Length: 335
Length: 250
Ligand SMILES: Nc1ncnc2c1ncn2[C@@H]1O[C@H](COP(=O)(O)OP(=O)(O)O)[C@@H](O)[C@H]1O
Ligand SMILES: [Mg+2]
Image 1 (spheres, each protein chain N blue to C red):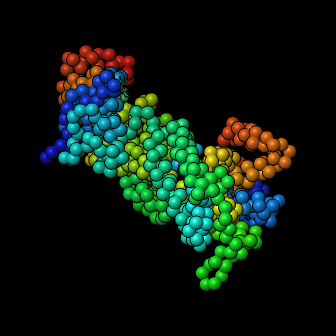
Image 2: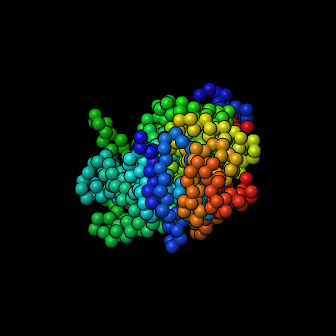
Image 3: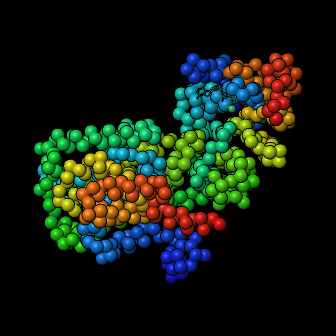
């Protein structure tokens, strides 16, 4: 990437914008990672930075299904929460190390997404929303009832990982916030690289085709149901990873991780940032968390503010913040 | 030589309404067959049944000897049956080239999540060839939704064509086209007909008579005539139910 491209990216040289758009796209993984790497230093607090990281990753996973495949699930807390709970339970009850515990969370979330996906994928539109919502509520109640394992209403506690041992005798001190941030960012970076590969792959073209026109995709020879199911599982696995990281970060899993509230947060973050854009999820997570932070300072009804902002976005900026910026560069490229 | 497709006693109902009943016909290779009939006669329903969009309620459809009834729709493309739609049916936000390329990809790889799309250069070559055939090469970077109507109809056909199908079903390919665009489309279908089996729904009689080897006439879901253009034109029942009132369709 040349310096002119960088300048164009800031809107200084409009005629070079198309090039900037293409370069942004080609370098989306390293650029996103670079932004995430400086986040703890540019945001007002490190706590905010790590939340942007984790919720951003959660939104990336959700966005694969919603933005790229065109399926609006209202039950993605199930995968985030399952990833978190299984990781916590594996450590607290089974004495697993941090890494096997993470794998447990990711595999568990993937299996759950295969089941929920298989049950929901044949429905469309509002029915798909409702089925995913209902199945996620089922998972919520299971966690609520199985309090011996999950801690029920109080959430799961007692699995603090103070130090993550790596191979070769190295370890990361997770009590140091900055070290923990980069520890979490490492997994987020891997996930981003993976998602970018998926989007560039033939399967990435297949989900676009399904999103654009299911009937036509089927006539072309795509098995639409299987394509959707695979996308659903990949999405669930990524959200499970985000949940896993959230458990390691907080050393507690609140029951809220499985709630419809969490399911709706990820929808809002996606819409704020821009559905179907690579970097949008992190923009959406940041804006949402900032509004929450600021609004909750001067009113207890901060959720009302978030709701109003969300509605304004849906009405006036349906492509979200980042999605609208991307569209601007595309328009210039086309003309 | 056996027929490419053999349709036996095929029917389709919607609730109690019989849209198609007792259709039997054989389709030989490399022939153009036109399917005509008044609006609501069941032509699109017939195409939907032949392309797997709808399951037939009765009867059997054999393609190269294989029974198609009960097969999932996406399998039809893999067997060599492709179609265009009466109402333009594209991937609107994708570029013209991506529209055709993804159609070619469907027959090649569907669940590869890890290699790069560009690892399959032959797909781009196929897309390029199909776009060349329908005369859309100069539009390849346009979004499909930004094309003119006639160009969208051509893209419809390119998407079907890129699969190199043995059987091509074209549902009113000139729908909504002016005389110039229609002329181009007729020339295209003539070129395609050289080495393909084509079934064609159309209302423009002059075009049908010039293009087809054979004409099927549907009326109220029944096959009321099946023969050469000359024979069908002379058929008194056909004249009564369709041709006599055809002026309004042209
Ligand atoms: N999916 C459907 N459900 C109910 N009725 C249908 C459906 N598709 C077609 N029909 C009916 O079947 C008849 C034949 O329709 P169609 O095959 O589209 O006619 P054509 O293409 O010859 O104009 C019409 O009366 C139409 O209303
Ligand atoms: Mg029709």
